[in-house]
Length: 95
Image 1: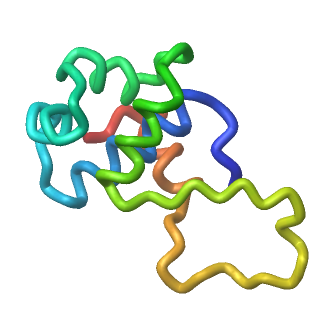
Image 2 (image 1 turned 180 degrees about the vertical axis):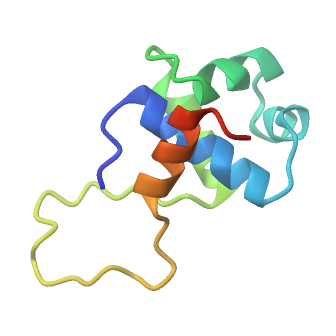
């Protein structure tokens, strides 16, 4: 699945942060943003600055792949994140 919306990306960020056992304050300090900013991003705020989003992704070890030809023969890596499951979980409101 592609991350198509700010809410999808927020769900991915929240899921990875929790998997790494980081609280919002710790991640915010590591990235250099406020906790409130991170809360808004995790809730899908659509106007977050791209540079700050990249810092969050880097801090969480999330790779941003802009491959314009995904069917070029590359297989899905074994460590791939199941975006469908993360987004479905976020939509159900499960922590």
